[in-house]
Length: 200
Image 1: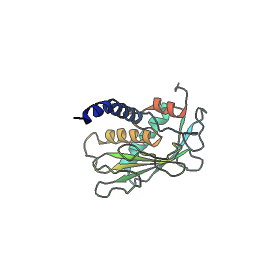
Image 2: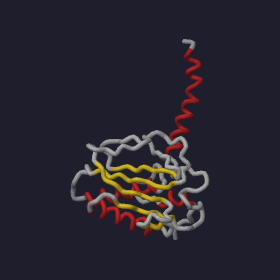
Image 3: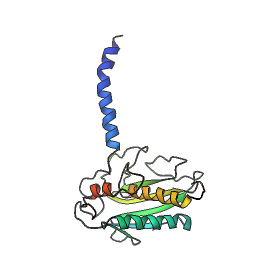
Image 4: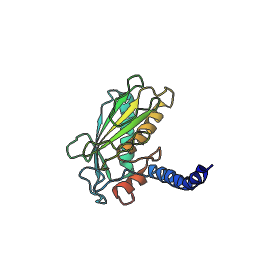
């Protein structure tokens, strides 16, 4: 019985910690100390240059990726998607995988059954993990490269193209540094992360 008053006294503190952690997980973008991406100055108004390398090896994912890159590019003048990695602020590689042969990724927890996931690394090559993977300990938030993994187990159906496009659109947001964000196009969160003025 002596321990109960002490336990009651600790409950408010525990609640504050849980709320603080939950709030931190809902941030629009990864925090950064100096630059949000390699060679990119926050609030500069320059286009963010992203090299997208499609390594899926098939038209099934490639077509959806092309649609989504066009959708993002049409939504804001501050994104420039390129195929050349030279001079890119972020290099994004898009790959396919299956639950039977999951990728082995240092610092990330593979979740079977999901449609896809994204890994993000800073300029020092450190993982800037998303939950439920272990939280990053020393990630600067200055993004250098990302990898989008797309699961071949996505169920077939008449709307499969639309589902592929929704999935890739969301994963592209993660690849550009967004944490928990809208499953759709999320230009407002990108504006906040990179200091862009609102799109005209």
